[in-house]
Length: 321
Image 1 (cartoon, rainbow, N blue to C red):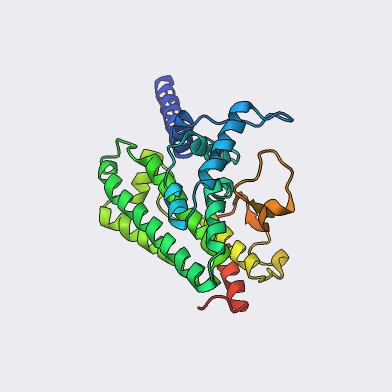
Image 2 (tube, rainbow, N blue to C red; image 1 turned 90 degrees about the vertical axis):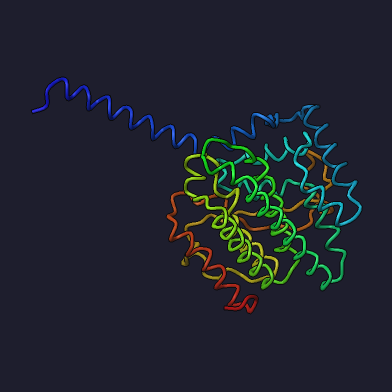
């Protein structure tokens, strides 16, 4: 029989455990967004009225994108996140979704006017030159990310500092951006290779650093997708590849993606005015498919969804085994 003293101690223990669980959950899902928000205040759109500060930032972002006259210049600008206009608008893009594990990563890429500027410059190249340039951009950005991980992982080993977490996030944003451009502009087989290399390179970089990724994510509260390819992002890349190459997702109602809600949105030009209605001349690629979030779908089913889309691409003769 439990004495009042034991009951009291047991109650205290339960409360302490519950508080720890809540704290870990808060750290996992809140710290990166909180850190971004502290340095990059988020603005909400007011219905019917565009605040002057927001309009000024968009105007500056358009100028930054438009000033890039070459692919190299546009690529270099993609690495710069310290400009207030750029960082605030893209932070706002991530805050418009429920968490970093939802479609925030893709949303930030679609909202990045430097990406659409780079798309236009690449699209003007002959097909073979364009494919080669897209691949070299990917190799360059991935190499930068791996080097940054090697640099900052030294600080992560003691699990006491967040040094470099924003630098890693934005460097991976550059990688995600060029993977997205590969999906729009290159053969499906090349995109498949890029996704494989992306994951294997960062796995090797983390192994070489000696930092356990579970420690990195759980103890530091920094989402692992700052380093590894995010599953949902990869799924959306393959969905975009299927769309670009007109590979229909037949029987989707009865297959592995039947419980995923596929939405559509357009990829707009870099100089599209803020708040303007979508015009044909502003649309670079229309009706891009994407999944906004996994919901309650378990990891094995997430993998199945990615494999199912890849199987469809193979059925269309777009990628190999």
